[in-house]
Structures are given as C-alpha cells and as structure tokens.
Amino acid sequence: MDCLELNPPYDFTKWESEYIKELHSLEFKGNLGNLLLFEDDTIKLWNLKLDKGERMPFVKHNKDYSWISENDAILKSRWGNGRISLIRINQGDTEFFENDTKNYINDLENLGNHPIVFKILEYKQKSEIEKQFMPKY
Image (cartoon, rainbow, N blue to C red; front, side):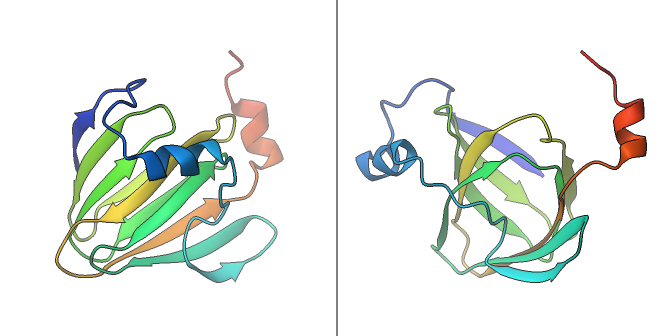
C-alpha cells in the first residue's frame, strides 16, 4: 500500500462544499462495508465493494479492524481532520488498525477503472486478557 498526501491536515480550503457539509452533518455510518457477511459476539466480517467512481460516505472508526484487498485499487480518502490521501493498494495487501480508544473519520472513493473489493474484519471489543496486557499511557 502506498499513500500520497494530496491535502495537509487542518486545511479544508481545497475541499468541495458537499463533502464539508456531509462532514459537518455528524451523521456517520458505523458500517465498515456495504454487506455484513458474518457477526458473532466478538467480530463482524464485512464485504466492501466499490464500483468505478463509487464513494463510501464518511465512516467513524472506533473499533480495531483489519482488511485484505481482493484486487488492485486506486482510492481517494478524505479525513475528518482535513487531510486528503491518494492510496494505491495491491491485490493481497492487508493492514491492521488499532482504533479502540480513537474516533477518526474518513470516506473512500474508487478512482480506478474497475470495481474494488475488500474483506474487513471488525473486532467488537478487546478480550479481557488483551486489556490486562495493554500498556496504560
């Protein structure tokens, strides 16, 4: 995964007004994908598919999650702090994000010439064992 910053944090001057309005509406989805494939007491497995030019609206992230890309992708992401990123992802790329104590917001737009598909594993809560060994800052 490669990431190029198109706009720095805390600068909304180059943002389209429709995205600023959406960001200020504070009506963010909690869904990490557009299809929930599986759920139990500890995880949710999401499928995220974005067709060419399709955009996933702003999402608030406050749970840990990991993802794997099923194909190559070129994406644009706008962040709640003003940053805009251009992201290149290769088939099979995977990442883990620890967000259990954070709340960050971003959208995702497919700039490529074909649909993109991700599988996203959302961890609902940390286990009691993990909590015991987490550093306290």
